[in-house]
Image (cartoon, rainbow, N blue to C red; front, side):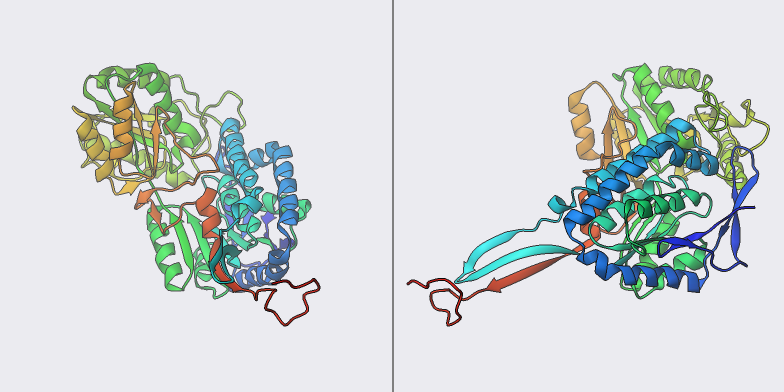
Length: 495
């Protein structure tokens, strides 16, 4: 069986032979590969490779870095079908979702190609006699990325594009559940001319993560994952003196006002709740139906759900694939039984859907009359379960959003511009959609939540991403007046 190796110093690196983990095809449940797990020596070798590469990469001109990044962009774009197929094979996403993931990652590489403009500082002339002051931004050194299983191609591109463009070198630790996308990206970077050691990949478990968080040569850590692990990464990394951004989980609400277009809102709820099998931190997991909109909205969502086809990602007719593991599938299904016990109404039950006979499949589920004290409302389920909470007034809906411990994203559907503007002012969340169910920003803005959805001061990618992977230096400069200098400057001196 194939063993997926690390990538260190521009080539595959086997690492120890006694530590590895299984990689499954979620559509069949079969193990399709093993992935090498790093020991401490392997992590140290990757960091040492990045350390050796840093001085030369930092000294590389911006124009040459950009030239390499444009080649990376072209290679990823040209081979997007291959990359998407890898995502489908190891994560289970249908082709459209996998290609969409690659496209959103490419946006970040394109943004990073503008690094000469993004690194420009400020200049103040003659702040005192003969004195100028200006600012510059410089790379941090060796930085680490720790990325999740749900976007194995996109999130690494969120991290490495700005980090490498700014002159840093990178050690990436992808999820061990679907590691091949990261290695494929490493191969494309090498083909594009990224020097050996500038981008390294180590696979593994908690041992590798803990070593990266403690390693004295790692200057910064960018993490995306669940809230408990994000909190752990932030606390452990900052305690070791590192700059850390740690993006956590979510419980995103979609508020639907009585004046909303029912069909539009129902379509949005379907795509936002069940895209990528609900395994995304920007999934809508709660619809808040305000006033009289509840019954017609639930009926419209139910009607659309019953037409949704679940199947392998390789099936061109499938609209949703499997979940990532059997254990996760079973955990998600458990919320439906608990919701019934707590008094909610399971309108569509994914446990009873017609599904492929093998693999980690669960049908889409709709749970109505959910209250805020139920676990199906409180927990981040991370699967194809959509809860409906009914309230009478706009103020109650906003209170639900603001009372949540999470603050990643939220959305409102309405035809009232005043209500929409008030909503964006009132809600406490990092990303807001107005008649847009999944408000993931374009690459030239930044992605990040509030509250327990983000630990740290910087959002990921965009302007915040450049700021995170650089530090500002202010230079105060005085040069002698040529008219008074005793040095021969090579031109006539006049008074």
